[in-house]
Amino acid sequence: MSHPSNASRLSAAELCARLIRFDTSNYGDGRSAGEHDIASWIHNALKHAGYAAQIVGPEPARASVVLRVPGEDRTLPALLVHAHTDVVPVEPSQWSVPAFAGHIADGYVWGRGATDMKDMVASVLRTLLNWAENDIRPQRDIVVAFVADEESGGEHGAAWLVRNMPEFFTGVEVAIGESGGDATELVANDGAPLRVYPIATGERGTLQLRIHARGTGGHGSRPQADQALTRVIDTCQRINAYQWPLRLNDTVRDYIATIDRALGNEPRLDTDAGIAASIRRLGPAGEVAEAITRCTATTTVLNAGVKVNVIPASAEAQLDVRCLPGTEDEVVATLIDLIGDDVEWEFLSRCSPVTAPYPSHWFDAMRAAILTQDPAAITPPVWLGGGTDAKAFSELGIACYGFAPLTADSAGRHPGGAHGADERNPVEAIDGGQRVLEQFLTHV
Image (tube, rainbow, N blue to C red):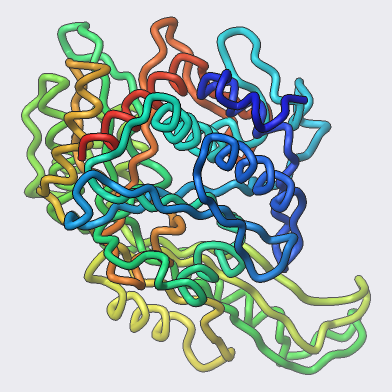
């Protein structure tokens, strides 16, 4: 395995492969692997390049790396770039390659974290090393955070930093992080290729609930009227079956309309039918639109019972609810109505939607950086359907964008396997994305 001092000789894609070789699986419930090892390697690579980075965290095993790069004009607002080093666990039997070998083959970097998100960690690291090697300073202060624990809510990573090291982010106005700026390839009505690079200007809120009930337990052969499990299941079914209304904010409307027009259509977004028709025409880009035009609520965990012939005296379920901007209070009121009085409930976590200014000069700078590598790119704004560490950093008043660029691959390869088997990312996409990122961070 390469020594950190050799990092300067590795491309962004090669750095990504090297970082994959650290098994940084996050198992939840405070359990993880490898976050200290990868933090030490990154810290040593930065130290060798002359940076005064720090390893920080609530305990040695949950380590993050932070540093501030002074800019040419320190009166300008600072910018934060954050990327997480942890990954979700793997099921080795589902993989055709070793998940933590960091192979480069067939034009791809293979392994857990190739797309989520050691590619971005590698691109940021490669940018910092390039600056050191070429004696380059960015226009403004760039604060960098390679954080632990994103895959389990950030309590040992971003959220810990926000609570315990807020002074480190003094002067930071804007952040960029996970999701956004990566190429989606479409085909226009006239057959021309179309490359869309959505830039995220916000993300849905996350409301996670626990529903629980107690009832009369007993023998499975003698059903009771007051069964805890039945009440919990009935409640979850009401929530699962509820049809949340279609809602378009200005960003999502712009996302759909920009891509639909670029394809050669005339979108009609004044009716539900018109919106649905446009989304269908967007192809892979429409899958994103589907996730950001409605609130959603999904039962994800159900716990009850100890034996097949015993009626459980208690039961609980957990639900993952995502809300659009401006709908949080309405969603909570709807949930209260759907839950009713037959069960008790509580929030496990409640994180409001995150928004960043659009239009803005920050967004324009991201667009300009993409165009340096792909002059024909379409760059609409977008919302994220899921959540990232942006929710933690936004608590400091930082406007958080999703911008972790990947360019299109000339041979038609695409990233795949995030949170699944055979995760992979095209070498060309990672290296091209790093050039976009460096352009943006150097000149913004």
